[in-house]
Image (cartoon, rainbow over all chains, first blue to last red; front, side, top):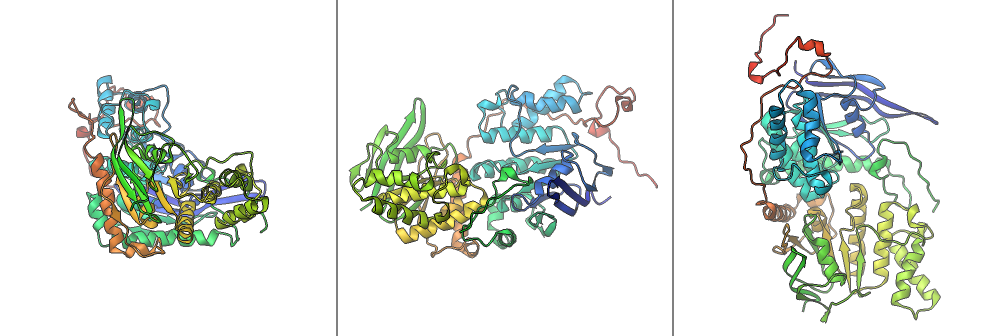
Length: 287
Length: 299
């Protein structure tokens, strides 16, 4: 079997008072086992909708998703998810937050082994000294490290990452990308990640899937990332192809953006990312 | 003759040393960007220059006068806009102009405010309140307000970090255009190396805290106006970018936690929770990875 994850004609339609809103239409994607794929596109293009359907957190209107030979129905611990905000339970320590999932999927193992798993992943992400702190005592970057450890600790069949570093500043982002890729390199877990950061996608992914702007978002173009692994940021930045690929991606994103922008004298910024995937009203004042 | 000068400036809060031996000189009309990690002390640095905080050691001078308190000679743009919510765009800016030029006639003030509203392309939104504006538009008001005071230096404290990537790009272009029209002395703080390279004449990395200090200053000798896309082809752009990122990552490098315990990762497989418990068939122990054998099956 060559495809580990197969997404076929995936479509998402939300009913609205003005009739159905087609967010994603006939989205097709095949991911091989051990492949790291990034979905890139603008805020609101539907990339997170695709990811949340793979996660089973969002109903599928039509089409289907097959993971390791089984059709996906609903959420499950076979897919480890890293969200944009780590969604930790504030009254539990980092360690207890990670143990929560481990206790579920490793219920046949004994307690000492379960604890070893949590200690292992929390230490590898750099939290050996902070694993018994509560989220409020951790910085934003450290919380996201807990989120990464939690996803890996479940030994999922695949990883789903929804703009995991979107809320971090660009330097903390560099650090956490390294943490993620180091961890990923250990067993090459199949991964699907949503991002709008071009540099992030080039550093992490084997393939970058560019999505067209919604509504009716679909795959616009696919870019194979040729950099050898294991990747070193310095080597990647110095690679002759790096800036060529970077420009290619930026051009794709900019051109799709221009399509959508109304030719108004008042240069309206796009809607904030929190309204992603939701229908919204925009008031235009005549100039 | 430097316009803004910081000599051996240090600042601590209680026992935590935030800034150590900061030396910086900015010439008149220069655009300088300081890039650093969040939490490194970037905002502390700007607050010192703004006069909102006092130094423990060292001196700060602007145009040969020592900085001791806040004043309208320094225009500040904060990350969180800091607009008064009950005033319109026009009124927010007028408030600043009123303070700096109380003797101007009403018409002159109005004209002046409208000029700066036009400069940031907000004329259609002149009479709107902040709550009716998007994040990008609010930040434009904040920029216009700072410029309308005609300060000697403009301090930008991560002005664009709260905005999404596209709005950010649009505003970067706008700041670049306004700076070229106005030729103000600007000190910008940012956590985005690309933003610094795109806008500044000089870019200086601030090492990771505690005890953060400024690294070597790098002159951004790329021709203006700089195009975000074309700049990718410039070998000099790549060089500057690499130099800054390397300095910053190295300054943070030796902060890893010490491991006192040997880590063990048990080689056990997770259970399939979608199956009923009876599928375990009485098994009470987890499956070990080394027990899994690959078997070829003829279909």
